Image 1 (cartoon, helix red, strand yellow):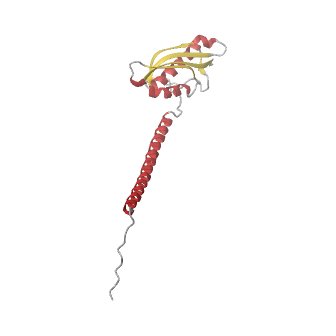
Image 2: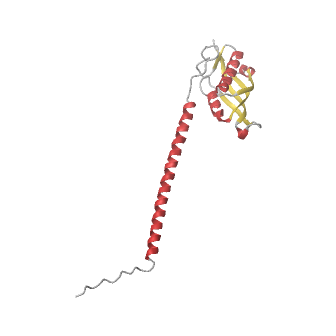
Image 3: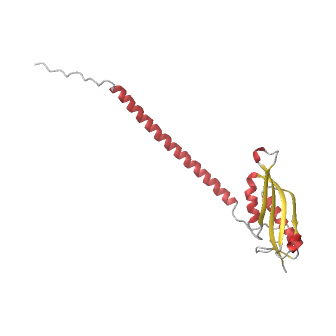
Length: 186
C-alpha cells in the first residue's frame, strides 16, 4: 500500500499582506508607547530642574537680618518705626537703608531724596524718592530687600522703564517712592 500524501497547504489570498499590516501596527504601537514614555521622563526631568531652580531662588530671598550701617552700630530701632533723635537723622537712616538694599543687588542709585518736612506732620511719615538703574533679573530681590526687615518700609509708587541701549530689556531704570514712619527716640 502506498501512503497517501498530504495535500499541499494553500494560504488564503492576502494572508502575507495581513501579517505585514499586523506587524506594522504592532511596531507603530510599540514606538508610540516608547515615545510617550520618553516624553514623560523628559518632562519629569524638566520639572525637577524647574523646582530646583525655584528652591534656589527661594533660599536667595529668605529673610535676613537688617544690614549693619557702616559705623558698625546695629540698625536703629527693632520695631516698625525708624528710631532717631531728630527727623534729619531718621531721613538719613531711611535713605541709607534703601541705598544699601540697592547696592546689595548691584544696582546704581542715580538720584534720591528724602522729604523730612512730611515727618513733622502728625503721622510722622518720611518719604524717600529715588531713581535706580539695575539688571532686570534682580528687581524682585531689590523690592524684597527694601520691604523686608525692620524698620518697616513700604513701597508706595514704582515706575519701571527699560533702558534704550540695553538689549532685550536686560537693564531697567526704576523710580520708586518709599515711606517709613518716624518717632523721636529718647
